[in-house]
Length: 477
Image (tube, rainbow, N blue to C red; front, side, top):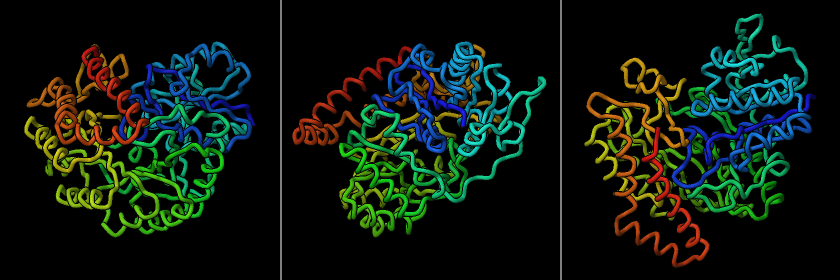
């Protein structure tokens, strides 16, 4: 095997390039997801190394100092960070000319030709699922014989045949060993999860067809392929053994509740382990299942509500009715299951009135915490195609459809004849203020802080970061 480095490259300060399905950007408060997409192939290559530069606060010089010993480097990239990541690749190649460099991630998966030809420093890009792709390259297999990659040969981009998706997810080794070997779990922080936490995928793919969602449309697919409940429980048992300080396990599957019988079976095994856990869910889980999950350690559900407007939910093919979401949320409140709700402003059909409708809806259902995103038209998504067809993508300084500013914060990449990008951009701050700056929510947060000194320190820090976020948004490019 080639000596292989898996790298989440240095980027914007606080930029979470390893983020999952929604978007890659700086968060309202300091947040980092685990680089699971890199950790999985790293687990398949003996003596490899995973470096998550943004989470560790590492700069290019830190990576250059160690790159001389490596033969292969795999860089995870994203649409907002691609230009910067190319410069990182060029710097590493200059430092170690013998280094073979590959790029992975949704951006290169849907833009393989321009990505592969973006720089001579890039030896190949991997399309779709790349776990076995990287293993084969690291083992010395010629690029022409490796499925699912694109590379430049004789001045032309060569695309090898597509690689079939992995159906037996149990055959993949656990990423927990890589976490123990290469990561410091205290670096990873999500505002609504207990700290320290650990997250990993128990399955890939999502049945839903949401037009904006990145990973199912680019790499994961729409067939939910899962690890067995027994294998998931074994991984969680390993977490308990390796990291006794962990307070919560988060299952980062796009929609863990897509398979209700499996979710219940997994929960019952987790209940025997006595762990606290959380997951992504759709707002359609029946009360009976929610109770089984709650009784076996479920603490929180991350729920993508997106909008309070039924028409917008239709427009984005969410497959959800507002009344179902209300009932589901009421059931969670009744069972004591906390919810982190996520919303998006600027989706197709958005108006000033629908924004207020969604804000009103969010306040009525009252998730414990919530996050608002700007609609981001990422290449490879139906939303991107729709935005191009209808000329919704902004054009500024020669770049079309930018989704982050120079400081790594989200900007509105979409605008409509009836709703400007500035109005969409400003509505995000309005949403946050109207949701959090109301007596009921302030009272909830104050009560929570009064009963825990750790929570008091945490909420005060998050409050400072949140106000800094609101201020920094004004300094955008």
